Length: 366
Image 1 (cartoon, helix red, strand yellow):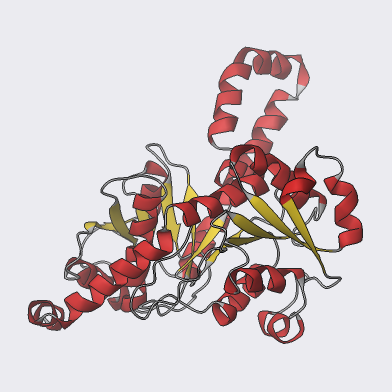
Image 2 (cartoon, helix red, strand yellow):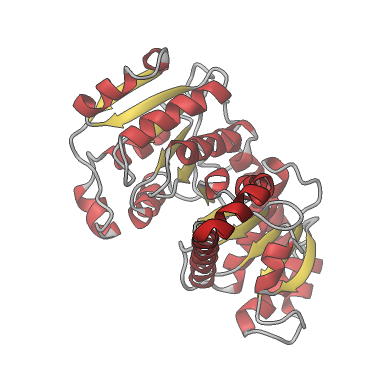
């Protein structure tokens, strides 16, 4: 997909052929490179015409490709012996990881050889490299990590999940704009409802940052359906379609949700594996449990988007399997094919124009 540049845009163009080419950090993740290659094979069956750049240790990658008929025909392998470890500090990765599989995947997006990059490696290093190599979209001060979480109603976009620990009101406004665009472009929600995570729903609750952010969203002049403040239980209830918060709060909330899901799963396993009565109960409830497991399978929601980066980068969970990594690849493809970055640029341009309008300036001053 070729990008039509907007004035001042730094959005990256897709490969000249117009085909969807996704660069994969073959060495990132707990079970790499096998998980990455197997994930690419799964994604290939769902993404018509997609091709892959597999970047990593060629001696380890080649035998894995041979296990999947036809996969080698849509893969170009780029060899490097360097990889970013999970405990490498972002600053060190920036200085010493220029030939790493992660960095070369991002470079491929910058150079127009790939439409997107996907990695299950070190999150901090991936974000740092993405911001330095690709830079931010026009109008975006700080890119954010966004993910999609299940709820009682429909999937919910949640951001920021850890890229920005300290945020001001303007940053939260930008997160709201980017999250709203993602919900429309990729999830297909015609009029997403936006909420700011807070300690209560009343307007006077929370600190000055969230209260000011609420005012900025209301007075932005953009057609955003702002629902007000939401609490933690509103995320799983699906009260809104996009939940906006700072990276510190978002990351803590995400880890608690992941831990709770794991605790619940382990408890069920223990109940149904204890004695004859437990095993009999499992047989009776097996159909319902399989449906429940499918609905809340974290692999179906794997892939955190780096929204606001001038190029498509998706972070897969490091401990996922091939199915989860394939989901992350498909998420990257959706971002490219739906023109998400171009839509964000357009919204940010509109926000900037509205800020220059006298009526909006006066409202913000109040």
